[in-house]
Image (cartoon, rainbow, N blue to C red):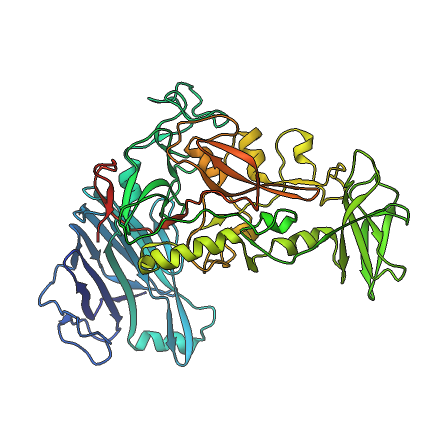
Length: 583
């Protein structure tokens, strides 16, 4: 065993100074050298450090202790035992009280890849003892400290060279030449988070509280009231998320926001730390209000339910069922084959459209089901089946009437404020409903679930009307975003749309009953159904939800946008003292 002492230690500290915070990055470079035991600290800028013009070389600091926002990081270095595994033991002490107003995020990272004799060698970290934390992407630890929070802990670990790809000559080279082992400690003041401020005023929605008399929490099948929710709540199931969902419910008077010449109401927060707001009124004469609009330019096709839509299939009316109907099709060499033959009773079946079998008709309902005379169908070609046809209808390739209206309003009134908005999801949920009586769970676009009425009811209706379980989840095809494509579809022009029936249910609205909700009268983004030849979407009619609005009907439009993470507000949120964005 050979005993080695650090011979040279380069200490470089660089960062940026601003009025509000100081970000510092400390690179501690340990240079292992088997020759000599001298100890030297360099304070000059070397040619190969690649430091920028803002670099500040600290004069003298032999304590090896560095401070970020009142928290010190001390790297303890003892004699290094260089054995056959080339291991070394280190520890880092972290202690102090964070004085960054918004808290601090700190990270300790190890550079693990080096080149020796034109070969890549790897360092690995072993025996890391930081509770349940583990190494990820060379990060020894990444953690947060709240403002005024104290910390006192020691991180013990070893580093070792992975010798799997090294030969004896490479090992000898390491023992006779200098090798840099680089650690990086970075302490950064956290971005101000309005959610943390609002969360202090919020209560859980699944327990009894001041305005919730039930011990099990809010009943979402009932409207908001002084006994079923009024105030700011935390959505159960998200309380431990990085950004829990907070939402206002009922007759609240402290969620007003003044922004961009308009008065808004704060609706909820997003899972990415944003704040969704909805239009309330005009404050400046130079501004215009959103125009009343129909949702679509028609109300007779499934595409009319979409905020954006894809391929348009015109339905036809005719006799069906006499030419070997079945509920399954296959396609090969330009022709269809219908299988599982048998008349399905006038709903959800395929028949051949022509004698060559190059197209099929999918009969989705008895158009005049009370007489049993006709069926309504879609004609399918080029190998499509009905499931694929429905997906093609729902693709976001064309804008609806209401999207064009909202986009125009945004371009004329909010485009100069684009930097304030996050690219969050706007959900036009066209998934098939699974809640409620069978007449609402039938699906004319599924051969196994049709009931002859040609109806597909969408998920947002059943969840709110019968399930009592509003959801903020969304299928990707219905999750409209501008550029975000991890969970969203990236189809929008601008980061603006409408609220959903689920969001309005959280806020207090239900079907058929008046509520104390703070929002009034607007189209929602949620469709109700397509049935036979009629498309209906959900609207907030006064303070209650109504599912029977034809998509071609003009109605009020209250657009919504989402302020991005880090937006800070001042004010109390009342109409007399509305929140305002801190510039």
